[in-house]
Length: 338
Image 1 (cartoon, rainbow, N blue to C red):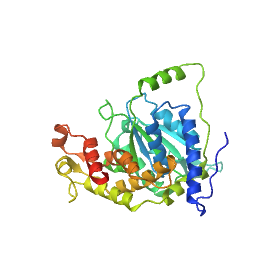
Image 2: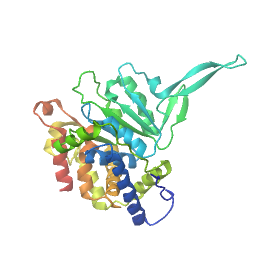
Image 3: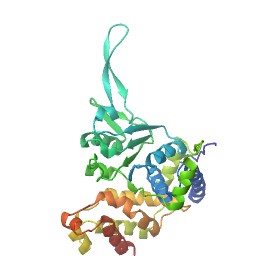
Image 4: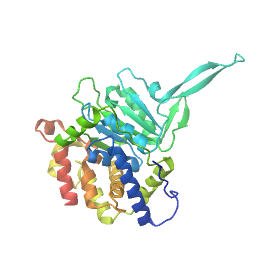
């Protein structure tokens, strides 16, 4: 299948026509993804939204739910050069970033040579990221935020675009470490991958245990993806949606005057400005995936949990009483967007 080339990201074309063409391209991309991923439509849409927004996504779910397969398929469909890192407790930062080695030339001279680590790619699959120690997890912080790494005092740019799609087992699983709050905040969205429905699991059983396996074809290339990301940032956002995003994020901070009694009593710390940025970008991307140029309130409601859940924490008393972040966020959404 031929890849699709979209107009130059800097070109000033008809935004409505560009959005329609982008929606057609993304529909084709989802069709290719569906060849290997059965169901999980919301998971696919959220992960695509993160990539189209130029950000990273954290896929959370128990083993065996096709998280790794989804990331591998996305790399193929989006035309991105991808690498995979299997995070383990003995993984070191140099195993991710790369390192300098002393090399001896033919003339006998010695010089340091930098060997690229697997982070030097366009799509990094960080598999079971919470299996590694916090020190190793933090090696990705600069890469995720600044799209560059510093090794031996030298700044080295990463390829563009650069995305991290990390998979994580639930924290109650044995042998897992909690991700640092600073790193969690670098993920645009947290995507919960749940068990398939009965019909989906039946289809998985039939389609994956035969003699052949379905393959996905590239739909986009690097230039096209960058163009789509530019279109997302140029999409208009109405004042009503902007004010709803601001009201929602601010009302989830216990010290804010707009916070409800539930937030003040339950939340230990709330989301920062990066949460509002994540909502603004991802609502635009979700609208584009659904064939619309501008986001609506429905997009804000749909993305509230994925954008806020990993940027908040409950107090001990609230957890003891059975309060969940989903309950708190849903109540805040009802106040801000209802």
